[in-house]
Image 1 (tube, rainbow, N blue to C red):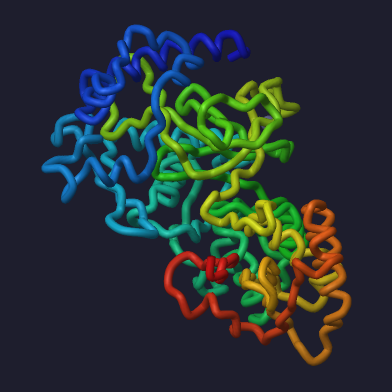
Image 2 (image 1 turned 120 degrees about the vertical axis):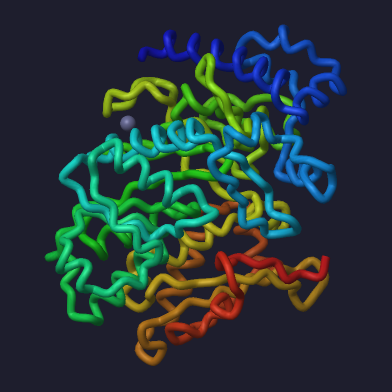
Length: 440
Ligand SMILES: [Zn+2]
């Protein structure tokens, strides 16, 4: 569809979805009334700016035990196929209700990503993302059915190496770090990665630096494509052009807000990603979201046709706001640290695993970042080289920290450890690699 056709389809779906929310979602019915919104005034996607923003907290506040029933549930129980919970980092998990049609729309988005990455019926794909409450692995499996692909649903990256030699899979889906650890293990088991049947990797589940992706691609000797998905229904994927993540604009509307959440930022500028479910006319949804703050930041790269031929807009790899710390007035994301670790010169000594902590310095106002990295052999590691490469890249990215580094109000310390010795292994769940331990 060309841009004009796509934009009018989006507007038609905005109108239908807002009307559906008014009619079927107890939360949104009250929300429109409380905010004095006449849903007939929401005609085009720009009108969504007039509506308030909801967040994960809003969902939690409108489900048991806070309310007697699930206020975001927007259809009859008979229509609900599954109930998904997000692995909430704090408090009660958010509940999402999915109809079979919701699943099919989710799968449609992943199917498009797979096609745009060159997948087809000849492919055999090992899925290392976990099945269960996360929608990702199940959605990819449904998407594979549409493409006629074969799925090997291990759900984890600890499968035996015979799966590689026996089934001759053509691709693996996992997170960057799972796929790196898998590579190291397979090498130890005597498998030469360049000689396997793997032709591509799909990385998702968390944001990553271009540098860590490049290292992963080099390690496996094949391209690595990014997908970004969530239970809330964003499912964006890179095509073979590697020119940003295509947003399935006919099924999910993405606005980028300024930090005050008052206006849209113009294309090319970073801001908060706010999503709105788009329902095709006549369809139902178990849970729908209007103006939902994803807590992720990104920017629109382009709304022009991509070199792959697709018209869907492309965005930069989103970063999690929860993984951002502020150092002397500068925002630093976990990905900034990761990019500095994965400098090519460093990788002759490192295995890629890292963690960083922010501490108060010795005097008031001083900040120390302590970076721990795992070395294949700390004894023969060129520590000076790694420190120089890290700091060089980090300050190149964060130029405003240079004067602070020079007058030592900001300093970086390094800790070189053996594989398996980072603190993050002691904590269950998704590893936290950038932790602020300052007192204030
Ligand atoms: Zn493309």
